[in-house]
Length: 326
View 1 (cartoon, one colour):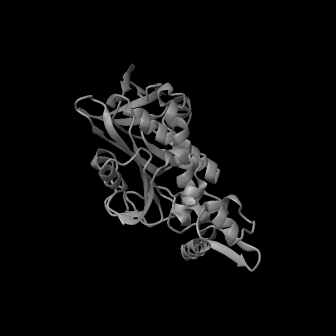
View 2 (cartoon, rainbow, N blue to C red):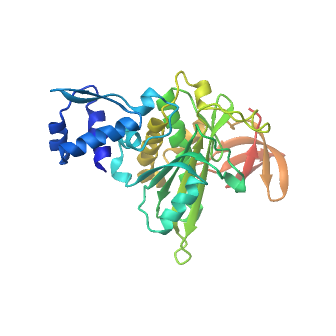
View 3 (cartoon, rainbow, N blue to C red):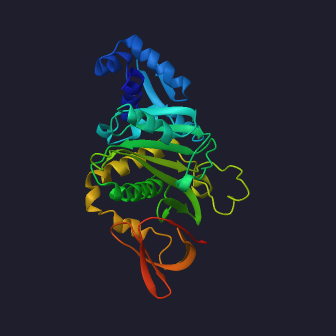
């Protein structure tokens, strides 16, 4: 962590308490001048920090608490994250073409597992099957790097684990029940609020992923949508009782995923994935290489396969695309 991050972390841990510059300097092993510079930099980012003679500094409200509509904030993410041991680098960008693209480039340069990149907006966000992903300012766009030791065919576990993590985090931060549409979409109140894109680089000698990048895009603040998206896309702040603090939600997603990831192979979370499904017992349209067909969703198994019934026969879908009217 930088001095600024350490100062914010310490003030957050003692929120509401006055801490002298001397105490902060001593606890963090930095100079009092460095403390003052960090405080000034944090104030410029929107954090409300009070200073009183002979008492010191205290954090009144973080930038995200004061103005939830603000961009995600690096210091606030790091302060809110509990699984810090698995989060070596956090980068926040004003705008980028795609956070997945940035993290893939970092992966090829040797970046450590857990590296996380967030952006205020994306100019070329992508979804599954090469589709574009609407990424205006006011949402959460984040990608993180994994280096799992598992066969490529098991990569679906990473996507389903990410989906459960996002659904849990939304519920924890906002109190809103979040559902999952197989494979990777999060729904709130019948509308899609989040998409997840998993991409991998394969080591051809071992057949194992050299790296995996999980990208998550969440619609938070209501925006005018393209006409074709308006009936199906929703925003968290339309359903939440109060505006969502984006930095806290990013941290919550990370913590939920970090809790699942070490036990990924056990697939314990898959029962929750199934329970959150918005597709069970519904008629859906399935797209496969031969075209479209109608089927009824009967189950989701522990491998993440969608079990559908068509003309009295059941089929197991390991991948593909389904649509449903909710």
